[in-house]
Image (cartoon, rainbow, N blue to C red; front, side, top):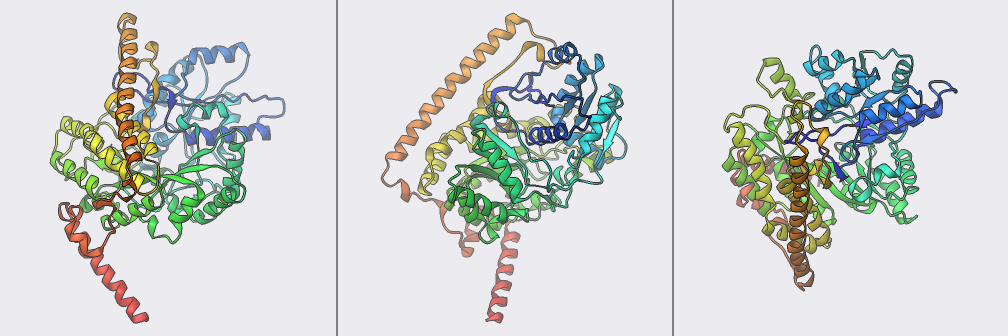
Amino acid sequence: MIKPSHYDDDGYPIQWLLSAVPSNTLACLYAIAKDCERRQVLGPEVEFRISAFDETNQRVRPDKLMSMVERDRAKALVMMIGVQSNQYPRALDLARPFRERGFPVAIGGFHVSGCISMLEGLHPTLQEAQALGVSLYAGEAEEGRLDEVLRDAYAGALKPLYDHMKELPDLANQPTPILPQDHIRRYAGSTTSLDLGRGCPFQCSFCTIINVQGRKSRFRTADDLEEVIRENLKQDIHRFFITDDNFARNRNWESFFDRLIELREQEGLKVTFTIQVDTLCHQIEGFIDKARRAGVKRVFIGLENINPDSLIGAKKRQNRITDYRAMLQAWKKAGVITYAGYIIGFPNDTKASIRRDIEIIKEELPIDIMEFFILTPLPGSEDHKVLYGKGVAMDADMNKYDTNHVVMAHPRMSQAELQEVYRLAWDWFFTPQHMERVMRRTAACGASAGKIMFMMLWFFFSIRYARVHPLDGGYFRLRFRTDRRPSLPRENPLVFYPRYLGKLIYDHFWMGYWLARMGIVRQRIKADPAAKHYTDLALTAPEREEFADLALFGATRGGDQAVAKRRKEDAARAALRAAAE
């Protein structure tokens, strides 16, 4: 089982000694494969040997893997799993040598599933795979669906396409995600992942999840969650990333939190979590308080934009900018670190408006860390389906579909300008002055300024020096000369190795510099007797009458209409309460 990486701008797989984000797909498929082994789906005489690779932190050598299989006179199935659109070219490049020696290969993941679910006929990239003799798998593998693939592969009769998109499996009573300890130790912080629900009821046009995992939500149980926790604690793994696209819309959220609270407060289990939520979660009674008690230390919030016109244009109607301050302040009071995803490249965006909006966010919203993305028509999204159907020009290189590269024309900026603005957006947010401000806000809310410093520097360093998105980031970059993308020339060793060594030295020098510089700031805050009393505009209570005084509503497109709508709703609710009394 191989979870491929994707190529950087120089054509090398993005790979680290320690990578950032654990692969939940790898954990799910590993658990399902172990269950197939337990059930002896190929018969009692067949011994399973399951090897899992996440290429973001493990080098994949097809020649060595094939030699190992041939030496043991074994049969093998090579599974490229969880392959996103930007990872698809790398997956095909890894598949080619396997196919040349007759090894069966299957590719699954969001690119295959998204194209199958949204497009008429096979996308050219899928046709290319089938021309190589690669089998395609669309959908999820629970409820015994992997059994069929294993049996076909063992018989030497893989089908060209396994399409399970029309019937997505129930998650209850299915194998729960797990990876061996030696795999998890390859992720920074030794964090593992699990999903407690799949599917999303919303209709965001740029999203692939709603078309791959469906709009009908499916859920695991609190018993499943406890099983994952206990199995990982046996491996001394304590940190978990719950990958549900929107944990607040999981109908079992309270039972999950109650079980975690019980494990933490009654049994003393020391486990912590990162979750993803929407901008309305603070309105669910008890949600944030129970999240805090359950061990949630970080939340990722799909803020997406502060311009209502852009949100409505992307069918992100559930995001209301009049809720942003109250929602973020509620998380700050709970001592939880907030990551906010922010998309640039909406039709109304310009360089000036993007910079203005970032400055507004820094001043008026208590966001700890911003993650920037370029609006991208990802295969599997409604945006891609519409543009593909109209024949609109989009970049043919799937490697660029990572939401960090411009892949189509913008109405108000050239592609080069938008790409440059994307890079500048990180510089505009992660200034030393603003990082200090975030650290002071964190200390004032009773949380650790040191922890948020390290997290901010991770993002700052990934973009400025490693030149990759922080979610693709890691510690100690690995590059192998012979692994360069086949479409690019192999570099001379006398050029490659000095450059690689020089870059490592350069990066570590600046890493040390910024750690020392911001460490001084951290010590200054720690020694400041007034640190706990720090406040600024972003931390002040969100009073309704102050809406008009904030640039968040006065400077953005549609902000005044959002305020008017909110006031009308507040008045209606007040009238209903008065009538009830």
